[in-house]
Image 1 (spheres, rainbow, N blue to C red):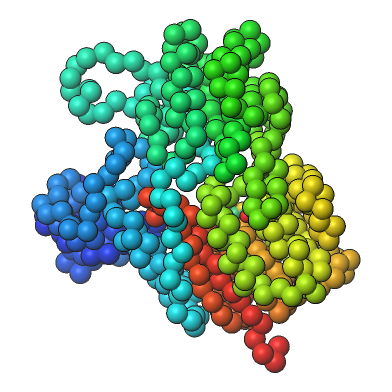
Image 2: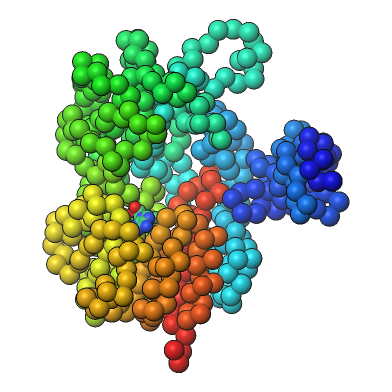
Length: 470
Ligand SMILES: C[S@@+](CC[C@H](N)C(=O)[O-])C[C@H]1O[C@@H](n2cnc3c(N)ncnc32)[C@H](O)[C@@H]1O
């Protein structure tokens, strides 16, 4: 019966709360209905898009009554662009929903006793906080329904973000509130220049075109890296584009390009060419310098990353005598950040270039007590590894959204370090992993940190200590 409900309109549903991944929850005849892009307190008419026996999914087609908790979105691209989906919710409320998400995930998935979740650490800047944006060139700009209805002809070249769930449609971005510095100017001037010069924008369906992707990375200290991906090997056109950027933006400290003729925009396996400046940028934290290359991960909200690392360091409770493992170390940021308070830190990460940066970062900061290894965690962190290295007193782990591989969790259980500090950008997978670790560990503290204002994403740090008598 539920499948037959597809396209049915459910009138006047009250949006009750926010669940995982920012979806709002209402009820219809006792059944949960998930609705995106609304706010608790709204009363909405919902068209069912998916019917299942246990729940329904739908989209709001009309808002009968706006929640008093709503705030006015500030970005002209809100609603079309997938970037800042929570602009219609005030920042203090965003924070309380995020903390609640952590509580819900631990109750629903981890099902282990936890202490009171600490008040979330909010960001002092809720706009222009990102240090990295990734824009796509496209010959198939997303047209709004008003533009289509007008019957006018529009420029179809675009440089911006993907429309959610549409790999082939790009929203042309005029101003993005996520990244400050010269980011908006670089994107807009490059687009104007390319249009004037009639360079082709990438056709995502035909997989051809000169200009493919633009990545802008910057640091709190004002350095900027710009990476342009080209879909064609055309040295003359590439030189023209890169020279334009170099001359127009002398502030760019690292100007790079990549020729990418693969089916996707990832470039971990491609050569990065330095056109001008250095092949990396450098971020600073507590007097330490962190070198970040084009292929390396660095937390995308550097101001909040500092707060996050402070929490991790505090939970680790280091006195200077400890052996610390920093799993999923990236460019060794956490490892180097805690090294001055530890006897030795061992970092593991699978991006080789990040490991190279981690070693350079340690050396440049005069840290001699760190060791870094490159490889897949489940293959590296084994019984053999443990035999060759001192056993950890503290394990800090910061895996990607998917969480830790089961083999890694089994090794951690075998290692049985007295403390694990688990940093995660996905409380659902974190809760799943904590449930597995609860065989030997108790949860001692849970601290959410907001790294991504205007989105439903939440970072969370959990302190686990080994159960007594184990
Ligand atoms: C969330 S980031 C954490 C980075 C670092 N802790 C920081 O704060 O900058 C996760 C890191 O895990 C790495 N990674 C992902 N899967 C991995 C695996 N299977 N083995 C080792 N490292 C992995 C990624 O390359 C990335 O650098």
